Length: 62
Image 1 (cartoon, helix red, strand yellow):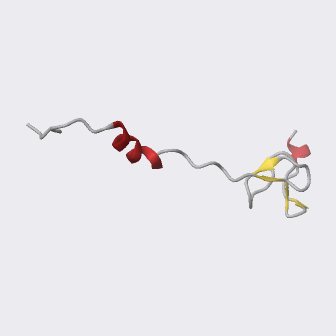
Image 2 (tube, one colour; image 1 turned 90 degrees about the vertical axis):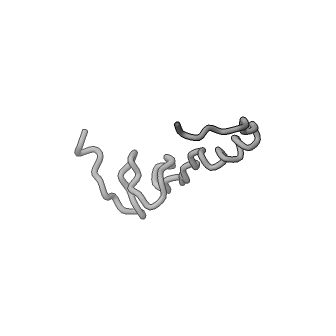
Image 3 (cartoon, helix red, strand yellow; image 1 turned 90 degrees about the horizontal axis):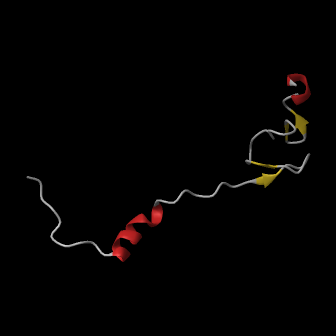
């Protein structure tokens, strides 16, 4: 039989163990072309611009 804990762990000890389990918040920046929030260093999904240049022509896909 495997060993079992002799005493129950306290809520504080349990919560301290779980402090790093939360997901970090995503770092979003505003697109300088359209103002929509997007991930940094990526093409804007709403307008298709990156660093002032049009990378993806979104009107062509529609």
